[in-house]
Length: 397
Image 1 (tube, rainbow, N blue to C red):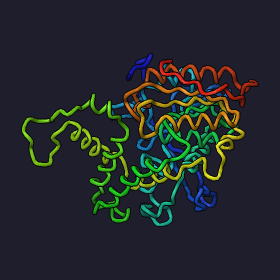
Image 2: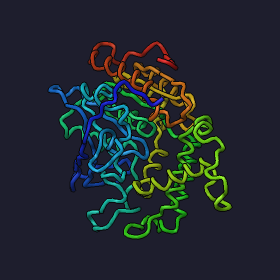
Image 3: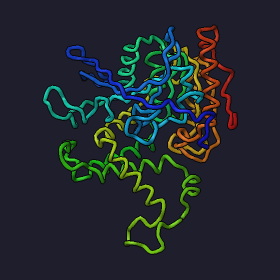
Image 4: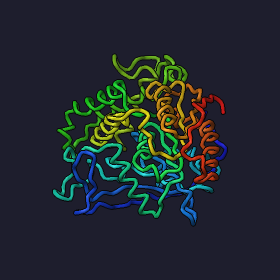
């Protein structure tokens, strides 16, 4: 249920921009290519304490951006996780300094395929190099360093954001005290790759895509809208769709043979049409590919994935999530346990499907508030690095 302990907001916010990797100091990507300069869009909420020990990095899912909370000038809707970020909320801005960054490859202020290539003066398009989740996290680490923060209190995110959380644990084990991966996986399974591929093919089949060189002309809106529609089906569950739409018709008389007669059809079309107004089709291609390439188990034994990690870990899953099913979260906990990492597993009994990580605010607030309080108070005590006795599952904390 969408409820939280506080209705307060962080108020009006501004997006900031950090530029780095100026030539000849470009960022070396996992592919071996170099990229620079790079700009990351980010927002901050709350105040960084004098010890710089209260910083929490929030990382977003596929269609998210840096605007996680509060209100941007001229916009009526708050950030995508406003229910979780703010005074007295799960990510309490009276206690913590929250940082939210748009990923490398994105299209909401960070460098991506829609950005201008300084070498040509034109948009990158498909000349933009392939980026991975590891590359996104490498860029974020430079942002965190620029803020003078040596070690994060926590990294938290759901879905693709959860992949970034796991990558932070692996890439920078000494720079994260606590980690909260939500509704995510150690690697994309074939079904997850398959859904992403359907979305990519929808975009590339649009006559306006033009091999990614559509900037300045008609956008591949129909293809991107279909990709979003397919994705949105995977975010919901059978139960949530039945509850939200049933078989209700929009109108008594059908406007056309293949119009949006059912409410669920109208909803999907609405979601698709809105998405094309705020997202770049090429970014969708690049980001979904980064998710598909993500595989922390590649060339590793499961017991070695989190070797050297000292962070406490809270893994959250949702019972009705069939896009990132609970067994994948349990595999994360197993990898932590085998590596001697203190990990807690909580599976929430929700009917919202994958979208639950954005909707089950009351449950998540309870879990995250307690977990961060413990992580902040214990610091670097001797329990860091010790495994819990096993998976601790709880449906109603």
